[in-house]
Amino acid sequence: MNRFGEARYLKSIYNPMELGDCEAEVAFVGRSNVGKSTVLNVICGNKNLARTSQTPGMTRTINVFLIGKNKWIVDLPGYGFAAGPKNDLHKFKEMIKGYLLSRPTLRMALMLVDGNVGVTKLDEHMAMWLQLNNIPYYVIVNKCDKINSSKQQNRRMEIAHKLGMTPEKLRWVSAENGMGMSALRNEIAELLEL
Ligand SMILES: Nc1nc2c(ncn2[C@@H]2O[C@H](COP(=O)(O)OP(=O)(O)OP(=O)(O)O)[C@@H](O)[C@H]2O)c(=O)[nH]1
Ligand SMILES: [Mg+2]
Image (cartoon, rainbow, N blue to C red; front, side, top):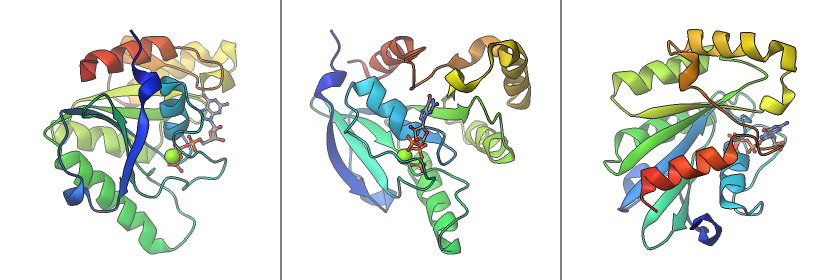
């Protein structure tokens, strides 16, 4: 049975140390505007759950969504957002890393990459940092609807290569047309033991 429909907003936190405990959690990480909040909404079948925007820098706190008694899906601010006060960049970075390093219940970081933009330096750094810190992660390529079908094969190889993984390991999705979403939903259900 699909329990994502019952997901609801729980809280927004600035300081990861104040998050409190849960039973199990997964978290969306990735560049600003890559579609983290949108994918979360599609997974839960509720487009009003997390706030999304065409402009980067929408999510500015650690936002927690609750499923069941005590399982979380966490939406993080994006990295690499350069507009706004310079201090914000540093603040977001600290928030994201502080969160990722302090959660023993984190089952998987769901790292989104923009299929149309490809892998940026910041994405490479994040993947390396996750590896260095032994944080398990999936790479999910979003916005696949924007990739010309003739370019898909090359893009796949290129993204995999830059992140040092085999192409088969990439998850290929689109929040726009729903591609890959039910498979991803099933994987998250398994990770959280829903
Ligand atoms: N074409 C297309 N657009 C998408 C897709 N997923 C998200 N978007 C759009 O991308 C924009 C950014 O989406 P958000 O979900 O707000 O991105 P985010 O990663 O949460 O951004 P921050 O909160 O700023 O870090 C919105 O205009 C979405 O509608 C997709 O699969 N395809
Ligand atoms: Mg967001």
